Image: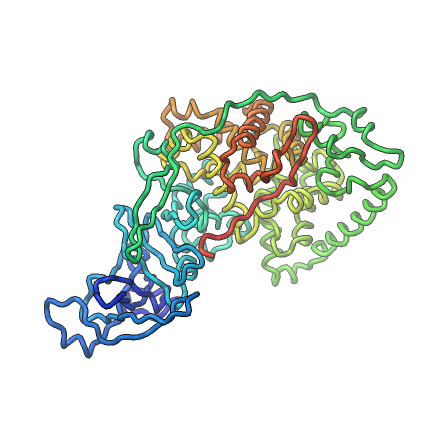
Amino acid sequence: MALASESSETQVLFEQGGVFIHTTQDEAGDVLLGGKIQVTRKSDGAYVEWNPIRDMENSQMVKPDTDWTVVNTVSYQRENSQTTESVTVAQPSRRSRYAMSFPLVDTKKIRRSKPGLGWSYLMFILKDSVSLPPLHFHEGGSPALIRELNKHVTISTCLTDSCLLIVLPHNTDALSQSFTELKIMGETSANKFFKDPYTITLGGFSKVTNFLRDAVMTPAANRPIDEYAELMSDLPSIFSVNSQAEQSYEMVVTESPLGPRPDVERRSPLTEAEWASHLDKEGRVTDVAELQRKIFRGGLVPSLRREVWKFLLKYYPWNSTSKERTALRKLKEDEYFCMKAQWKTVTPQQEKRFSKHRDNKCIIEKDVIRTDRTHPFYMGEHNPHIEVLHDILMTYCQYNMDLGYVQGMSDLLAPILVVMEREVDAFWCLVGFLDDHGLVMNFDMEQEGMRNQLMQLNNMMQIVDPKLYGYLQSKECSNLYFCFRWLLIWFKREFTMDNISRIWEIMWTGLPCKNFHFLMCLAILDGERDLLEKENFDFSDILKHVNELSCSIDADKILQTAEAIYLQLVDYPELPDTIREVIGLSSEENGLTENGSHASESSIEVLADPSE
């Protein structure tokens, strides 16, 4: 909540007292310069300001050549200490040279104190590499300040130093251009969103764009490519805090530290005879791990998809019998039509007073008539499958009332309905896709899923392909916005219907690791790297090129490359813990073995907010 402002041109957005600068100017001990920190909004943007507490009565007594006058001495007890120390608290006599005010967009980094070291402090490092005096929060409030700053800029934790926060201005122009070029959002909706990204709801898809507020990227200034190739270094930056030297590190890597990329072989799709061999007399699936390994290696023959997808999407339990599945299907059918009846019986008068239902209905009606209309299953006027698509999505709004419908869900449903054909089966498979495979987080209003995926993909690229990452940074593309559509709907628009069906069933196995879709992204970019660099593509060129890749990517090659990258990561002994966590590796696990095969359950890893 904004506080009362001192002028009509400045609005105080945040204020915290008890914020001190520690100096050693006084021979008697530490000198504490008490003050308060504010985040203000001015005509040219947000500012961070720290001003010392003023003592107007003493200001008349100060000599012209004196910066500070000591007016009292107090005692305090440091946290985690039983010793009471005497220190001097200096009060300002006039405008102090320590007072500071700077535009938030000029901030390059923020160094924060390590946990458990007493008072927390923050030190702002500006773009010209000037380090401002550390600000010590004696009364707390530093996490709240970071949260406030995060509303105006992008703040992310440095991959190699958890005490270092990277600050970047919001690049709404780049994201808006990404949405337009990738055909994700309508122009009108995009314009509304970017005018007020924190309060405008775009009938659904704004729910998947608020990630901009928190999206994590590394700095992208205009620098030479060679310099940007040195991404993660051990170059020390010395900061002085309470006369103690503290070092900050950023890794520098010009070539990938990973070993040679191994050759990977795929196999033919699982056949009906192989599937039958995994069923016992009562219809239970046996040796599930081996079955999943076979599916991961080659997918399924199309005739098996209608049955096997129900297991992969958690509609049917792997250990259920045929008889149990028949009973379960009847229960799920009743549950589905009960939910469907709820929205079907909403009267026109009720709808006038039910804005969320009205909005969902409007967006769904617009989306389904333009979803895969060139595919034979959805082609033609008055196609009954379009109505089924509509009804399933409307019923999903009843199933998940908090989320409702968000643009992109129709893309996920379309291939499932093609395979299942039956409305009820397609609905519950969609639920499994969204809920059990983590995609629901892609559409959540808080946008933890998309925010963290962009961050994790960014971090992985620094390890897997630092040269390409350096090139993207030099072109101000390291935000990876052009991957947004890939992550949001799992490459649905990048491959043909048959290929995306095969890719999805492979990824639904959870093999060879968690978040295999990140490795798919890296594999696609690996195949385009030489062209991007040869043609010297800039941000707009890359967006256009990525969009033109649609339905022209070699699915087998990408799957092979993605698995090979995974094997490189597994064999790298110095793989950062953050990357190991993303792909689900522990010190004892090495993922998919040559024989069979450990598999971690697929999910979207959510990292802690840097401000907490």
